[in-house]
Image (cartoon, rainbow, N blue to C red; front, side, top):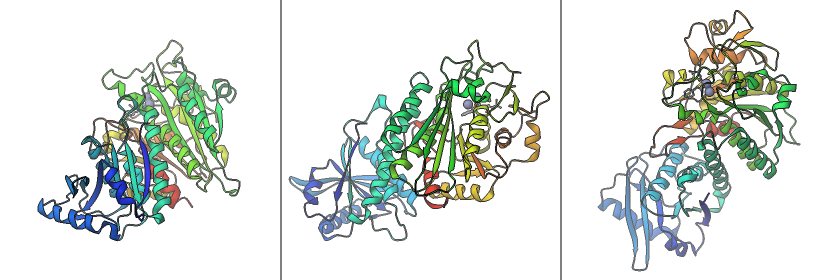
Length: 490
Ligand code: BES
Ligand code: ZN
Ligand code: ZN
């Protein structure tokens, strides 16, 4: 990444000098009111900006901006006023920080300043959202990198910790977005494994790599059958963030990590198949969360599990009709090799259940049907525990990653029974695709473990660019799970 950041002390007497060195200074406008820290060194700036806002009739409405210059002769500052409408919460601060930085970069500026101490009444502890959003605003996929961008966070001392927390989160999200956006020929199972090895060496994560031989020994017939048609070996990666001080049961996070989903022998149609490089995004979220919590040294024991495989139609591929046996000894009739995610998750959930978890959350681009149900505006959440599901929905609402609950009815479980094995990977009815997939997964979770499944097939990537990001991976669920871990999991 070529993106750098600096933190400038907004209380320092020499700050103004550094401001003149910037290419541009971003100032958020809460409607027409510029958010400039209350500090007498900014009095003149504030007075001038307010005057210019009036002269230009700048309303500060959402997604509007205005470029102005404040100062005189050699001592002037270019200012980008970013309209935020009526700022109400942390998620809108994150959104506008991101859009503001993207707009400023698109105007050609590289060395950019941004105030992080905004004096907005009623919104607390938003500084980490602001710095996280600003860094997401700098993100471009490797092949089209932004050159030499530097974000200067102008912060008071008391907000430093939060600003730094958001920087760690934002930088990690950008780094994992690069892996997520990499296509199947680059982000192979081996490449993902190497990435995890690297972060394991940089953090306190304790990682186990279950390679193909280990999966054979453990009789993980689900993930093995998915990878049979590919030249790349599958892997289950277990990352442990355990604390010596806290002996409570761990939270287990599981991510579907299919590096490319061709459908296998039940080959997908060619149109739009290229998007299936994003079938690893559940795993990418889990990986990103594990990297962040280990860097932030979060005081919660968490285990992240990735089921990594490629789904291809090679000559050794699983055939429709084949019967396989999973880690927990259930047999599955594979009627459609394109319903591969649930086969991988069956093994991963079996392994995850053995850590005596306080709860399990799995994240997966599991069904096209979720797009029929919720479009690209929300992910589906399903599970066996109301408290868990509702706390996740609440966390999602706080960060702008919406979840919507669908039910797992007994009918759906019955619909997944096979005439030739314990279960089929395809429902008999062909209806309720997202919920029948979750009903299938529920058969691999002991009833006493609270469990939630998040289907991100409609939200894991954007097809085209928006004010908030380019086309590509969104890392949907990272922000919501972090919020949940910090606030609701205790
Ligand atoms: N990876 C796909 C789900 C998907 C579809 C993700 C569209 C993102 C966008 C999954 O493996 C799949 O193919 N599911 C099938 C299941 C069906 C065969 C029961 C589906 O949804 O069509
Ligand atoms: Zn598939
Ligand atoms: Zn898939």
